Length: 273
Length: 358
Image (tube, chains in turn green, red):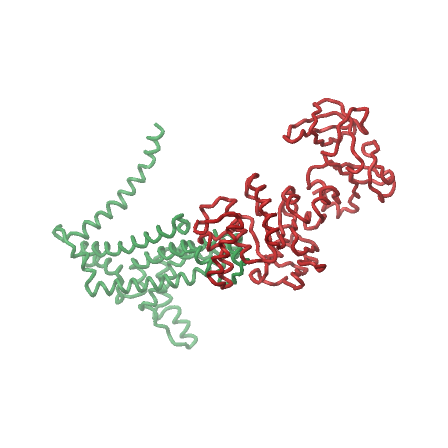
């Protein structure tokens, strides 16, 4: 009786999962592997190999990797600083860094557009100071900037979480055994924070790889990422089959990332936000 | 040899405005087993961390073999620490844990391999090289932590409550292990614990601390048999601490009865604290006792009975004896003169504050 009741409680979630995850996924697989007449074909998936699509995918991978690397370079030292500050101070600092996350994603990106535009705020200030203008908007650099700004918190949190759990005495033990600051970082802090780094990388890399909003707003219409290509197939080209096929290819990268997490973050420490 | 090996000179340290150590001076001789003993918050761990280099004192100096090391970082000190919760590196194998210090010092591989084998044999864990930290029990992890420290051939080993997390039987075994290790290695041990039995079992010298002050320093026998104040008497073993009046040399009045004792030089008619250990009290027939009372409590403790005897003045005497006196029985209390320990009453409120009253 009681067991039946408990199973009933899971019902709404199962409906949710089936309705909003499983069915859409199956639809994408179906569209991706069929042509307009509904016949089976691999053409949609293999069209990733066309030069145009390869270029978009390559650019996406490149920019996402660069953004992820920059995020890690910024987040790791920051997380170390937060970790050393102790609980009382750091929770406020974490809050400050996480604060932008609560603003609408589109709004944040639009704000950067306004800042970076040819006649935007930054160039206005530079012009006022008689400095040369920046031509960042509509370049890959602007997209990287947007990615880093938007996804940085997703790197900080898991890295900070995992650093926070490292026992002071484990670090002290390394120092006690003769390790200097740098050796302690290399042999203790760093290896022990790998799970957090891996989940941070995944949580930045995956959304960066699939984004089309950031590239739309900051990259102009000339720079096409794989996200933009897929989006256009759905909205402008009305070729859902091709869009789904390319999505399947992207999904491969996401699955790879999740496999990485599963391998290195067995306790799920880093993902606990 | 006359020069102290480690010398703490006028060390003071406070955290967030709370004074933890106040003008602490402590000398440690080479090759001794010194235990810092006291309740939690007495400053014993802070003292150890200052010696280890994990805290810097606000005032005072740390002298190590004639050299001022007060501001030297931990990695530059010729000593190693065994931490309270082992603090092994969870991402390394046992062998890698033990080799850590040696690899940092860039010792040759054959030397490191020999040392790992030697250290594992020393702590009775041969063949554990490739085990993971997780797969070891608490006691085994503790031994690895010790092995990891001693392969570096430190001149001093600092141990911060290393047996605190182990169960009673294992703790007793490890106590003997540690004494054996100390004798085999011939290095100085500085040991921190709140367990008085541990301190009495292992140490050459016990330093009893409370609220940042050293209360008494001496051999285990001195600390146990001749506590210098009520705090030490109370903290080391169980004891009866009574108000007494020193009538003259070798005679003290307790609860209206006069007891012969062996202490001199306290003056005449002076209030004193009297310490009598529960096992030193003989319960005899009422007419044979110096004082009489009624047994009000009785607990069987295994080795002995623990009884409480209430005297007419209302004081409850704690008595340990292998002979049973049932509750309600009138008994006489007799104490041999040399089992009575006389102590000066705290002279000022300051002293009182660091004594038994807190």
